[in-house]
Amino acid sequence: MAERVAVAAMAVRTGFGRGGAGLLGAGFAGTPAFAPVTRFDTAGRRTDRAATLPGCPDLAEELTGVVAEVCAGLTAAQRAATPVLLAAHADAANAEVAAAVVAGTGVAGVPRTYTNACVAASTAVADAATVLRTGRAERVVVAAGYLVEPAMFGLFDAGRALARDGRARPFSRGRQGMVLGDGVAAVLLTPDTGSPLATIEGWGRTGDGHHVVKPAPDGSGLARAIGTALERGGVDPAEVGYVNANGTGTEFNDAAEVAALRRVFARAPVPVSSTKSVHGHALEASGLVELVVTVLALGEGRLPVNAGYLGPDPACELDLVLEPRTAAPRYALTLNSAFGGANTALLVGAP
Image (cartoon, rainbow, N blue to C red):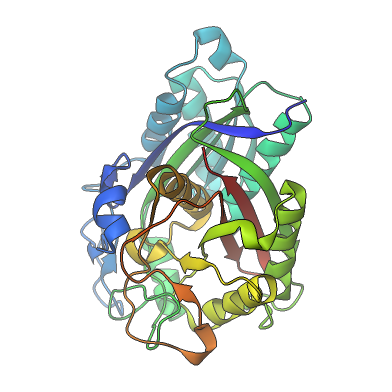
């Protein structure tokens, strides 16, 4: 049975490109990857902006690529014994995507595919950590992917959830909504062997039971998820040195998340930023992309900027990272929330 779960390898693809260099450079500095969408027609929409990879990438190919990257150090026999927990936005094609990943990488299979909206990938990470801690596998890959496409772009635009000015401005005065972004990522999780990129120390999952779409305004559900993650990891709130927030840039979600953070960190304010402000909202893949960003922050000793800030909102008073900041936190949290009041919190330990 593993006492600690290690992030042994990771791979990521966003609007900044394939790999983490763009995220660490422009992304951490607060320069967003948002640009006009060219892969489909946005005529008649309220906005035309998203953070996308060039051209028209294929989701199965991109997922196969990141899984192959994190499995590069494994033997064929080890890959054949490694399951993949997959969070993907392919709807009826999810089974085909999973089959393509298995065929292209030689992994054991995809026993679970997660489609529970914006907490899909973080839920998969929590399940993978449980599998490892209970000794049911020697290693697990978690993979997740979303590529901006016309159906969801049109749906969120029609629901007035997308920012008309094409900028995500989490926790800021004058924020108008989210901006979508491509996100494909994979992490290889193993028992801690002493030299990980980071460790998964704890996790928590809750449901608000408040509204079919809106979060509970008092942040109680997300606060419980954070509390569970901290308790599972045996970590006090004062030991957390950074929070990668859900921060979609929408009015209700941001205010509810701030209420949750105030409940947990009232006595020990913590630096906060939402990197959706630079790489966009990758829906089902968000939790894994943001886990990768959090691991990068811990490894580099730098906190990513909360971009797009126009000024303080009384409902969102936080220690926001508004310019590049060096730090060496021992622990960080990455948070995600979804329609229906679903919440996840992952507690990440520095290498």
